[in-house]
Length: 121
Image (cartoon, rainbow, N blue to C red; front, top):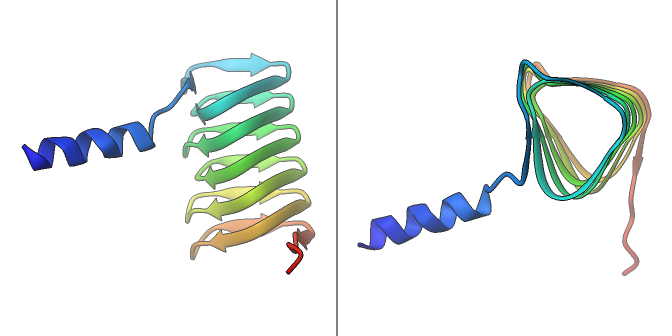
């Protein structure tokens, strides 16, 4: 019984509100709230209040603004993250970033300038 509740809580925490599948090619800007997972191609800006998960096959050619970003695919554009960007071993980010925290796993690629957000004490 307890194991079921734990799994249910974990599923709610990783809930995806919007999904762009790997066979999808989207042209235009995306503006949304919640968590979005992109496994396809997006040509345009992605602006959201929430979390962005970019899968290994996912590609964004445009600017990105999000609270948290988990990057396993490729972003070509300037990126702003209010909290954290995590570039996994397969992730590639080409462009300038503004971020509070950044994590780059071994093998991850970042080419650009980084501006760290400082919070007042």
